[in-house]
Image 1 (cartoon, helix red, strand yellow):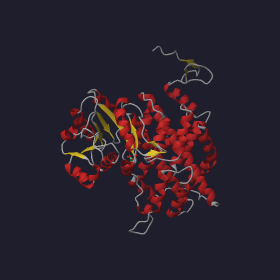
Image 2 (cartoon, protein in one colour; image 1 turned 120 degrees about the vertical axis):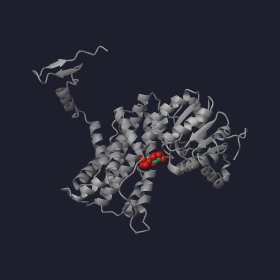
Image 3 (cartoon, helix red, strand yellow; image 1 turned 135 degrees about the horizontal axis):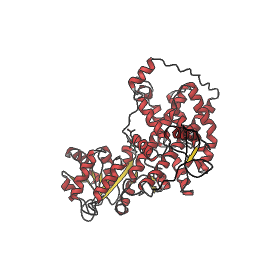
Image 4 (cartoon, helix red, strand yellow; image 1 turned 30 degrees about the horizontal axis):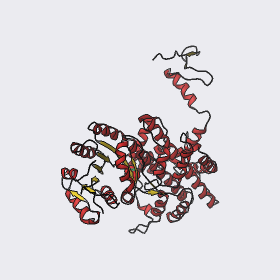
Amino acid sequence: MTESHSGKANIGVVGLAVMGSNLARNLASREGNTVAVYNRSWERTELLISEHPEAGFIASETIDDFVASLAKPRTAIIMVQAGKGTDAVISQLAERFEPGDIIVDGGNALFTDTIRREAEVRAKGINFVGAGISGGEEGALKGPSIMPGGSEEAYKTLGPILASIAAVAEGEPCVTHVGTDGAGHFVKMIHNGIEYADMQLIAEAYDILRQAGGYSPAEIAGIFEEWNKGDLESFLIEITAEVLKQVDAKTGKPFVDVVLDQAGSKGTGVWTVQTALNLGTPVSGIAEAVFARSLSSQATQRAAAAKAELPADATAWSVSDKAAFVEDVRRALYASKLVAYAQGFDAIRAGAKEYNWNINLGAVSKIWRGGCIIRAQFLNRIADAYDQNAELESLILDPYFKDAVAKSVKSWRNVVANASLAGIPVPAFASSLSYFDGLRGERLGAALVQGQRDFFGAHTYKRVDLPGTFHTLWSGDRTEVEQAPSTH
Ligand code: 6PG
């Protein structure tokens, strides 16, 4: 551990719960960093410094001492639970920091909060950086994927420090300056939305393999291990196999069978969907994943429905060729996953437009290749797609992915149709396929919706063959009138 020439820390961490402690240890383990640490309760700080003397932390009991222990420009990363606590720590630091200093929020903050905080802090000449950090506890310690927003100026100081602790994928650190103010937290939010969709899709694949294929959890673990050697190779597939292999020590049953089937959430998936609704970007796969968690958690309602023995009129899925069946499910998963990513990247593009961020989608996909929860081989392909065409209308239109969908679409339809007939819920698979069909459809039922809107509300419509805006006199003689162009 080298100390900076001033004997002060070049970086500080506030909030020493698991994520903060691990991030501080990660920082301290990198050549050139001296790390100051501070926590509201001193006991936690004491524990960290006594358990990790090798880190050479400069520990402070008070916020004043902490601030005094930082070299200029002072740089502190806040790792407290997102919400009011973050605001309290920001104001404590902002009161003591000087112009040019840098406050980093490394929590899962809502990007609109980050935009607000950045503006408030910037008014004092202090830099505020909202940085999405993904990878859980282990990532924080060994190398997360980091998505910082904030100013260029702040990134000059912060960038090398973050690069020193980030995961490395194919020689490149998994960090990039995503964009100004809330851009980093926005991209982290979308990352989490994609994470929800990816997890739900994997769960649906598992459910089909189990219910229709009759495979045991241990056998399905083996299938996922195989899948992890191909196009689907990813952290989430890898840990899925681990979870499915786990046997409950108390009962000897598969772990997955003793876990209550009610999925929790901390809200970042909900934010993604709410934001996408506001932006008018269909993130239907992500939304289905969020709603699937909600449905799973409606315990009373589910119990009542199960008791009512609602008619299913389902037809058993007769699986004659098991290998072909498994391959169909794999392809359906791959194609649905592509939709989730395509929708997520569309939401980033829409957010960038709305909030004036210059976000490089290829760079985002590259920093997700390592460290984060959705890390996957697949991200390399996405990076290639945006490298080849930064203006790509949809990831699905990239030649590589177009070809991949072409190879999968039959399987995808088979799986969705058979699951539906068999009464196996596949909300994310089905919605992703419908999205795909909607995207590629030359004419949609939306024309009729426009007609209905014009009928009951004179909401007007456009024609395929003429410029201008029209209304039909539905309650009169049903002739069409052209609307005068708006004067403002
Ligand atoms: C990460 C994760 C992490 C967490 C999310 C989702 O990138 O490290 O996304 O942020 O898993 O908060 O958690 P929930 O499933 O509880 O919403």
